[in-house]
Each structure stands twice: as C-alpha cells, then as structure tokens.
Length: 345
Image (tube, rainbow, N blue to C red):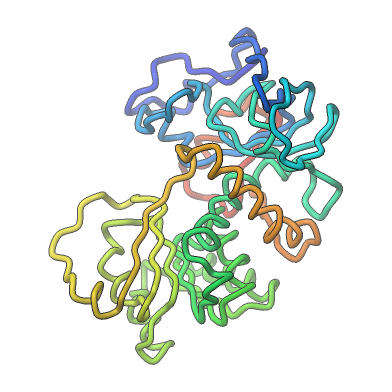
C-alpha cells in the first residue's frame, strides 16, 4: 500500500519537506481479533504529527512509525470477532475513528470498537476525518476528567480557544456552563470565538493573551469567584495564573505543556484552601478499554450535536496527501483556524 514516509530519519529539525507518499511503503496489517481494515479516505493533521516527524514524540508500544491518529474511510474487512460490543458494523460501512498511529496511509488496521459509523449529517464525509482526535480529546477533558455532566460548572476557561480542540471544548462546554472564557492570540480570533459562542447560544468572552492578562479579566468578570474548570495546553507560563483563577473546588485539566515542563516558586496554599484538583492527561497511550469508553461517551453525548449541525467542526484547509509537506508547513505557520485535512487520492 501507499503511505506517507520520511526521506530522512525523524529527528529534531527534520523539515516538512522530508514527507512524501511512498508508493510501496508496506502491506496492510492483517486484522486480529476484533479488528478491522479500513480504506482511508482522508486523515487529519495534529500537532503531535509534527513532533513525531521531528523525533520529539515518544511512540506508545506497538505504534507504527507512520504518522497519523485520526481518519475517515470505508471498512474493507474484519478479523475474527471475539467480543460483542454492539458496534453493528459491516464491510462497506463508512466510518471514522482513532488509531495509535498509521493513519497517513491507504489502509489502516484498528480495533473495530474504536470506529464510529458515519451517516449523512451536517459534517461531510471529507470533513469527518478532522473530528476524532479533536472532539475525543475535548470529550475526555470535560466529561471524563472534569466531570461536567455530574458537576455542572458555572464557568469554564479554555486556553488556545481557536485551536481545533479549543473550538470543540467551547461548544461542548456550552451544554453545561453559564459562561465560557477563551484565550486566543489575536483580535480576529477574539471575534471568532465569541461568534462561535453565539452560534451555540453560549456567552463566550474572548481574551487576547498578547494584550490582556486572562487572570485579571476573569477575576473582574466573576467578582473574584473564578472559574470551575480550566482546560490548559500551555503549561509553565499559565500554571500559577490557572491556580489563581480557579474557583473553590475547581478542576484544572492539563492536556499539553507547550511553554515548558518546569514551574518554580508556586504557592501551594491555594491548592489546599480552594480544594483544587489538577489532573494531566494524554490519549494516545491510554489502554484500549479507556479509549473505547471515551468513544462511546463521544457518540452518546457529543456526536448527535455534530450530526444535527448545532456544533461546528471548522475545517481551515484540505490538501491532497501528495501535498502533505505543504499541509505540515501550513500547520507550523500557525495561520489556521480549525482543522487541516488531507485527502487520500
């Protein structure tokens, strides 16, 4: 089969121009018990793909070297079925889902329990490839870690609000929170997240981190109360301010560490007297059982809103996979608002 490959070894500094479609990369892996082979129609790009290309993303055990974790495609065959999970999938079904790696390819072999069946909806079959990683991650942060269904928050702070996951977080949070704050990098993105809030009937306050201190804005807007849930991708630079703006019994979910891993001079007192909970999370290295539970939570609580068109999954650009190098360069330019996809043509 064809698959995206690297002309050189993945290491720090490996450029996007090293990516190319290898016409004879490998054969599709035969499906094992409760697995399926899917003919990939399109795949989505994620920041982890860039890190993996540059040798900075440790792969989970058993993950293939080929990039890519989210895709849309058509089931071509199954392995032996051992367990019944109510997936009701058949050969020829259109599906979308997550895989531990290898989505930048003509075929991918994946647990059939991680596949969601696609039906005609407000999200096109081309665009659905940009849903799994983004929306599963947002579902994980709000439902499975922050517990928004059980403990409905008054307010939520979403960092990187115009990113793919940020856009999903804002919309999911609109089901539960009275007020949403979102940090972004430009006045244009402030307008974007606030218009996104209007589209789902939510009050969203966009905060441009280049010109405003989000902690000051939030404390003023909430009369010092703070927010019940913080979802953060930044890490070091925001850590103390996240604690500062968290309300009593607030929950801080750490999904990435873009600004650094080490924090010095943190005052621990607020962790005690605010009774805060801080939890870090990854998804790719989680056990299969966890990922299946997450997919089921997504299909129950979130997917109906995407199907109906209430939630939007903005797609910024779609490339041919023969231009995957250009797609990576575009992601690295930080110009995008929404998902970047490649069609396997």
